[in-house]
Length: 296
Length: 296
Image (cartoon, each protein chain N blue to C red):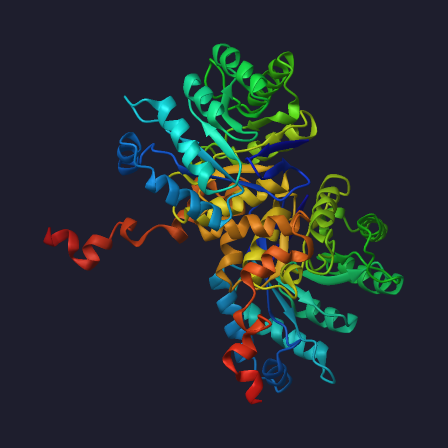
């Protein structure tokens, strides 16, 4: 149950025995007017800043989306990927609802990408799965189909199972399918939390796949969203969630995930936690720098 | 699987279908020199302030401990309980390692208390369980015995099972035994998180008991303790933990627990969350108070 992705120089593993995979979501013009305009005009400076900032904040992968209405999405997506890969070495998720754009992205991508995404819709399956096979990469499988998103977690499990089976027909292994069980907003659906936790656990134990989610969706419409996102992520991780497509620039979510890594025994000797959060006075060369130790 | 506790006027249920039970730990002279001195001299003003502050911060119950070396612990514990019960209406946990103090506390307690605690040690079982039966109350069962605290979660499960069985011999129901599976420090034992989560789940599913823990122990020796405590609590709640003995005066832990209540579907319509965290501008009378709305 290891999904191996890579850039030209760096491998990353999504898996239950690995630190949680943070997929940075910022490179996406949806709802970002200025970014959309810039990308359309071939200005990738903001894309590059977003890439650097997210990696610095702890992103293990970056999602790249170029969905701009009335623009040449395949070309812009391919250009974005080239720019990002020239700058950072984390593996990328190639994100589009347009199959030609996914293919344009895969064509220029260096390494083993995660394609975002396929659904349980027959037409989409038949268009996307051959690409996954051809480029030997991994794919995000969203558990909805022609009938939409079911509120029943058993139905969403069935859709995920169908996608995994279709993928196998194309010679794609279950460990290369990363299922998004679809987190519903907690404020809109009282059982959203318990049902998705049970679903994530089932996907791990019965379907043996890795999982991902859009992490900020859960707190939609509620105050203090970052604290709620952080807690929900940790609780989903406790049930087996292995990655999230999220904004890594928020400290609360990052702290929650880093703490969850300790709890899951994926931060040996708490090294990453201590490096990030130790008190300045605990730094070994602090005394020398300030001269305090010498004066005593 | 409902542990019913009460004060003279208020009932509280510890259970998997209930909001998480926060047991305030502050009324405890261990490591608090000034408080110990005051309690010994019959000054309960700090005890009273601690009681009010903890209830205001969200404590569902309060733990009361009067363990002061060379002092008359039974008398001080009884007095503390009377003072606290005169002031706040949450149920109490009567906390002592001295059986005579537990009995003195139970003698004056109004309502149905939680006794903290019994262990798997034969002598302790034979002293404490008859008290639980006599006063018809609930008890915290700590999963260690004569051999100490086992690092093996299966051994700790066995000790818990033994205590529950002994309690049944005395006519005490399993739902009146709240098991503390003993959280080890995450920094000292790499598998502490995963093993205690599995143990909490087993105690819920196989032994059908409620659970509690000393919440701050998990982050011992590590920086940014509150974030780690909050995350670990939420992850344990996701596995079935139903209460914690903890300091409710820290916002991060309270936010983590309140968010976990939403995820577990124990905060209907997110009412408590919204009441606590909504933006000031969303308060209905904000415009009137500041006069801003009138001026427009």
